[in-house]
Image (cartoon, rainbow, N blue to C red; front, side, top):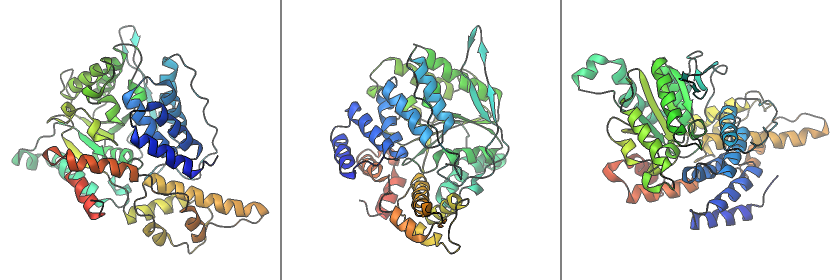
Length: 421
């Protein structure tokens, strides 16, 4: 159902004026979800869950948004969390089989096999943990474009690991984790999975719904279980999505129970509960300024990597991937479309392909299949606009006035290059 753009703009403005108004944020998220803007809706729901992890309405909306984006694993996690709170989760959204994988980056090969593991400690079962087997391997070569990100990954993380003699010569340590940050829908999860492929390690994605629990101490118990499984499955990459919800600044937490999760996180990262050799910890966030400063100290998430919207080459690759199984004219100018989608996230580009295909489908209802043309994409661009601009405005303020130790220098360089400051 299409929502009047003026209504959305008005509510967005109210949310910007009063960011602490959680019910208003949820109302905006529901409208965005109804309008087909699942990525934008997910961002607002995530902000609400960061402030109030047990907000039932937010959890239900998060499940619906994840389903709309094709992330069934995360949707199931949110439904489990809703069930643990004693609330009937939303019914799964019935969606047709997508014509191409709904990733915000370029897919590679069939979906990895998932192995369900269940740990048992005493008489109390731990949460089920999904571990993606290393085959088929997805590496950084499968990430189109984004050369600065891959170069930084090699210098800060991969090269020292692969060259132990060089690492010892320069006194380089492998302690600590890597925090990926940037606007939503730009491929942070895909890059983390590709990093696991580079290391030949198992990939273990962890979402907030997999950890947070209404019962006192249960969240810490689940977090510990994830680290213990990662140690037993080493080499492994433990990836925490939306880490700002798990490691939120303790000064911003409404409930004291949340500080226990942060403390447990710090303890596990320091290896106080076990040996973390062979366990590589990665995390992603859209709001690094909300992450507790203790988590970013040396030996923890002491490396930050900015993941920006895909460049022209990456956008063209995403366009081709999402049009691969759709009828398109043979001479469709993907390069021109990519050049016209500056500031689009990977998710925005995927949504653009879907919208252009819908326009062609509408014209084909007469009985003759009409392929997708450049004109369809041009019309779709009037409705599908870049979703990251609100994030850039927020990020600009933090980069300008909270750049302690130059942590946001990369972001400032990008904003200057785009003439946003």
